[in-house]
Amino acid sequence: MDRELMNMHVGKTIRVDRGGPESRIGKLLAVFEDFFVLLTEKDGVVYYKTNHVRSITESSKDAMKLGLKIPEKLDFKTAENFHKLLESIRFQWVKINRDGGPESLEGVLSDSNKHYASLIVNEEVVRFSLKHIRNISYGLMVEKSSNDDESNSNNSDNNNEDHDSKKNEDNEDNE
Image (cartoon, rainbow, N blue to C red; front, side, top):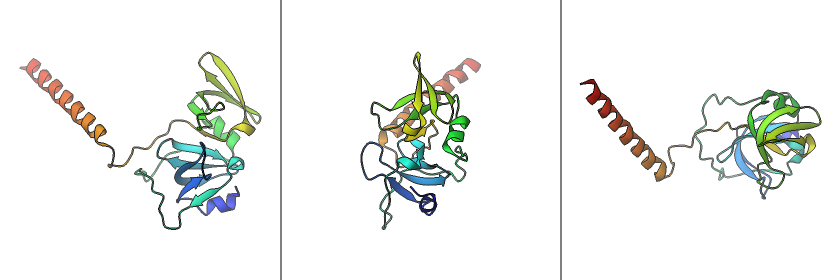
């Protein structure tokens, strides 16, 4: 994808690729030399290498909605290029190629250079060729907006009850 074209979409909700396991809808946060940053509802902040993206789609009627309340100052990693991005998230828990297929890996990013990235996965060190990394994320998530499902509100009610009963026990101990 062309950097100039991508820069025109910064701040907009787009779909990366038309379909398939790597396709995601999210808000385009920033564009750099050879990657861009997309905030998605399911995966949080995802860093996509531009040379692997076949298409981007912007809704002409603003029909693509993102169910997230985006903080004014969302703090995400920035870097001149993808290699330097990997250096900045070294020793973080990352997921490479989020599609869940055989080339999807999760582990601690232990090292990287211009040719490969090393991940510690269980008791193995896996070296992943940089040219085959389509995207990467390192766990930065944004809370969903207040339209979350009822189970979350029920869980918080239960947590409040537990907290209230703990407070009552503490008050009885103090008397």
